[in-house]
Length: 417
Ligand SMILES: NC(=O)c1ccc[n+]([C@@H]2O[C@H](COP(=O)([O-])OP(=O)(O)OC[C@H]3O[C@@H](n4cnc5c(N)ncnc54)[C@H](O)[C@@H]3O)[C@@H](O)[C@H]2O)c1
Image (cartoon, rainbow, N blue to C red; front, side, top):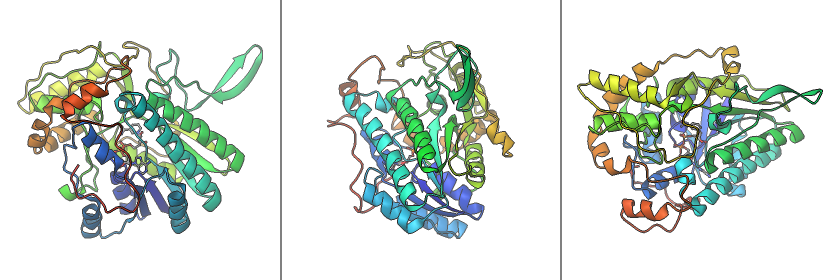
């Protein structure tokens, strides 16, 4: 199949491209490199050094003997989106290119607006361009399990049967997102569902759990590594914990640490996306996949990280800073995840095994971690309307607001992120 990946330079876009190429699919990609710029904006970088894009393309040529067609640009520019779809006419579009950090969206009004304006605009541009240029193509849209929040009942896959005042219906399950970023995903879900219905498109809305790990079988060389963010804004809790343990810092679950989330290994997330791509829905069908393997509490992640760290001769303690977020620190959590299993999905990786792999990989990049140890502890507070000054002080320079996406057509960045 011919697959277009938006956000191909990102944490999950890159390994997805490799995964699909290795299985005979044709891959093209879009990226504006805005994640690289925004990680720099908060004074951080990826633990794994990521080569400039032309070097990534060259590594794929050399190591996999395959080609990725690439379009540098921002989904905010509709003529650019149209031009790419007109050239590519893909069978599937996997849409990953969004501002994906909850803390980044909570910095201040400018970061909140940038997150929602960009995410909704990109999705709407893709929907309109698909309707115009490839209405038969399948949109695989990356949402998040965070759209649902933590209701006190089981979470179905997108829809549920409800009886109310003597009548019944199948309705979208209520969303209760916990950041401006997560709300942007909720609004996206509404837009994708609506466009699918009125224009007869095909779409899969993936409620993605938190992804962990940096290895997939196709990553056989450092030149093919994907990014690994570990700072408080771009890194996940598990990423921060592993880095804290390596740097001899305490592992820091926020608050009580009883918050639970769904998690999935990088390799298995790629397997799930491929299964979605290879089994498209019918025209006019909008379907929702809850994409995760297991739910863990943040304390459980901290404990497991501590135990694996011991195997590597490290002896981290666990400390609980106050939770900078506004969220339930103790709650019921039982989402359903059957749709992917019905398509043949089987988990292949286990958390402890991936944790060992992370320790092995990241210890090689210890100097890069060491240089950024000051960006691990939380600065962005959900209750503060303006966290920018504190962040700017920590980053050591003035910041005028969210790093804008670069202008399309400018030369690719040579900086490592
Ligand atoms: N990584 C996770 O654990 C996780 C969990 C749930 C959902 N998701 C979702 O999956 C998607 C991919 O996540 P990721 O971790 O790979 O993020 P990422 O930031 O590493 O990758 C996104 C890529 O898209 C590019 N991009 C962003 N906005 C763009 C735009 N307007 N135009 C062109 N390019 C743009 C970025 O430069 C980046 O390379 C995101 O939508 C994210 O919200 C990720």
